[in-house]
Amino acid sequence: MPFTNQRSIATLEANDPSTSGESPSMSDSSDIATAPASPTSHLVEIENVYLELGGVKILDSVSLNVSRGEVVVLVGPSGAGKTSLLRTVNGLNPITSGSVEVDGIEVQQRDEAAGTTQRKLKGPQLRSARKEIGFVFQHFNLFPHLTALDNIAHAPRKVLGLSKEEARERGLQLLERVGLENRAHTKPSRLSGGQKQRVAIARALAMRPRLMLFDEPTSALDPEMVGEVLDVMRELAQDQMTMMVVTHEMGFAREVADRLVVMADGHIVEEGRPADVFSNPKHERTKAFFSRIL
Amino acid sequence: MTFDWAFFWDHLLTPHPDFVTGLWRTIWISIASMVLALVLGVVIALFLRSNNIFLRSIGNIYIWVIRGTPLLVQLVIVYSGFAAAGIYRFSDISVGAITLQAVIQAAIVTLTIHESSYIAEIVRSGISGVDQGQFEASEVLAMKPGQTMLSIILPQAVRTMVPPLGNIFNQLMKETSILSIIGVSEMFLVAQGFSASTFRTFEIFLVAAIYYLALTTVWTVIQGWIEYRLDKYMGIDPQQGVIAWIRELIVPRRRRNRPVPTEVESAPRLATTGA
Image 1 (spheres, chains in turn orange, blue):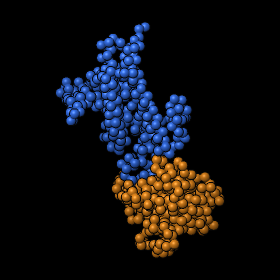
Image 2 (cartoon, each protein chain N blue to C red):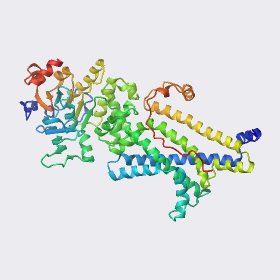
Image 3 (cartoon, chains in turn yellow, blue):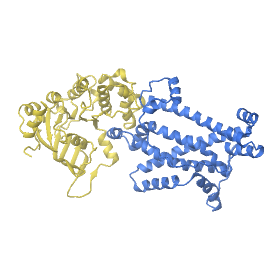
Image 4 (cartoon, rainbow over the protein chains, first blue to last red):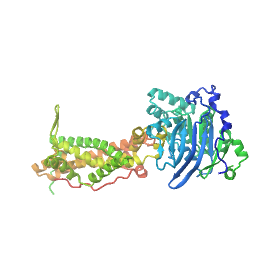
């Protein structure tokens, strides 16, 4: 591995939003939990993570830190392990060894030397960690039996204990934010793909997470609907939401990402500012990847 | 052929009060057993899906034993066998003016146990049929497994479960005729009594058959309505009004094209009555 990413993000910490504060221009930015001031610590710390599924090595010694307010875009050929890495961050994929911390909470940790004692957080701890992490799926995974509004308001009611009125209020605000206030009482089957994904983003935001994970959020969409979803994500980034995004939308990566991470074969092969990586890719795999898609 | 038309029409259109009582008994025993069997069946299904190997084993053994033995045998064991062995003897329970006969208790208990073993498999496969993404979506929203099951998974699983569960209820209503063996005076036993006293066996059982058919027909209509409502609930567009839906019951068109609902294992059931 010619490029290790250890602490290579020092330059980016100057951009840490917790020092620049909230952006008062966004009237509804209160929907997002802004990170408390602790500018030195990373929100996400992925240390030396290995992941094996069915004897196949999916992630091989991956380390990646994400600062508060940073937008990290993961790109790379399919099978590179981008989605797997994203899923380890909130414990959807149990790791083989290494550790994953979000906001100081160890989501998972496993020491190979210690043998078989895999420590994935037990239910309650894992859940309290997950309250802080929003996840947006490629295939939306909206609840088909609930209206758009109820999809959003469900978890705040059940998990955060909001009253019906509060949850509804929060849901309506978020629907307005993603431009779907007139579809509040529509079931997902009556929404277009782009609308579904915007509801899914609103659903994740309703938990007021500190971190948003996007797993190829536009890959299942018709081309004409990609823009509306990216617009919502762009606004989120402007509101200083910390985001990790797996995507094939290179335009979005170039424009919105603070850092571009290129993965191949379970490794991080290259990372840096998108403009630099795009214009001057150093690693062979990066060049090969860009030459195929750009 | 001798067929007493007057007797037939008389009993069909103006049934004897005993016959009406038997009919109602058939209906409410069926409903009570079905409701209880649903609850028990969901519990057993959750056992089958449990991470605890002990609970999984209990669920498997339960289904293996209950589904592998005839209802008739189970009925006699529960009512007569347990009493004879001194394990448990059913006795009448009175709450105010209402008395629940010992035989009816035994009947409901047995039917509940028997049907729950089939229902458990239906519920289990119904749950398995819900998209894995729904579990993941609930998981990342930090919902507890119980909340996920009750508010996300089961409501969706119900749609695929209704057609096989409807079959179960249909069979259950007809199977209540077996209860006559322990002396529950439901519709079949009443008919048998008339048959013995009048020797109009063909006529009276034809009347009974028509009443059973009426019961299951009413249920078919109700089931169709439930499916129609669930389609709307799930956001699957039924694309038809009530009239089209009734026509659908008679001339199924959409049903043919529907994705096959959860496979139900239809083990051989008792075809003969205990008469």
